[in-house]
Amino acid sequence: MKKILLTGGHGFIGHNIVRKLENSEYTPIIYDSRSDYDGSIDNEELFTLNQLRKQQFSTNVIDYNNDILDDLFLNSTIKEHQPEIIIHLAAFPRAKVVLHNPQLGCDVILKGLLNLLESARKNNVQRFVYISSSMIYGDFDSNPNPETASKNPIEPYGIMKLAGESLVKNYNRIYGLEYTIVRPSAVYGPHDVVDRVLSKFIVRAKNGDSMRINGTGLKLDFSYVDEVADGIILAATKLGGANETFNITRGLERPLHEAADIINDILGTKTPVIIEENDGKYPKRGALDISKARTLLGFAPKVNIEEGLQYYIDSL
Image 1 (cartoon, rainbow, N blue to C red):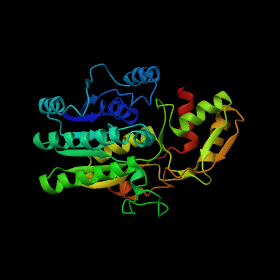
Image 2 (cartoon, rainbow, N blue to C red):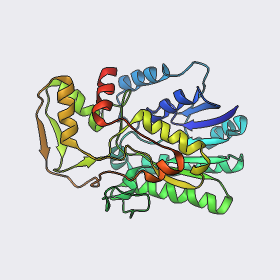
Image 3 (cartoon, rainbow, N blue to C red):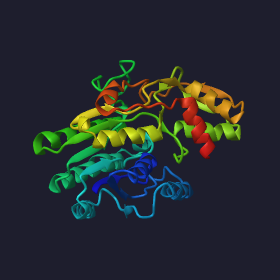
């Protein structure tokens, strides 16, 4: 069988991809450090999440607990298994981790990426799939925002992810390493960390604490994790994904205050929503144009935020 190595295979998106690959023609190989992201995730929460995520796939999955910054072990792993495809998901669950520790962000996002690209090049990997972010666009200048839109990231995470895209493309131009770049947005769903926006809203609504929104009129393209995993697998395995960049999202924008209202409706709570002054640290976003992914990959997301939040809350 063909093999796919996934960095971050125990992560939020990664474990869903592993689960799906087990029922496919591809054998998944996990390479994950199980990091607490510089203390941004409580150790108890991290342990619980890892246990829940491991339950989603079989105990037969090849699973390495190591860091992409360990280039010697990384290269020996790739050399041993000779995966046809690498899906590089290992990064951070929130952009604010990089905002608070840019040095760590640079090490993981750029040095770790370089280690992977070098190993892929040396071991004749057929395709390198880089999971980027919609944060690379900065403030959206179109609605919906296509892959060709201007890219002016305003915070360290987006800047480093965009630099990573450039590095990946250069390995294709110079060394012929085939690539696919994927840009997700506002991914949510079961087994997520509690520090992401919708997860925080759910916890606050349950506890009767006000749900706080950083600025008026904020909208995001909320994307259900199961469908994002489907999109990444399509991007990694379809011929149409070769040397292309894709927005892999729901393709619809929803205001944050509407998401908060939906959570209140599902839980039967009346937790107040408070709009705070925008601190300007993060870009103004909205919907992404997914027509390219629909055409070249057959990507067809269907889960709206009402359904996705119901699934998420039911899983808790």
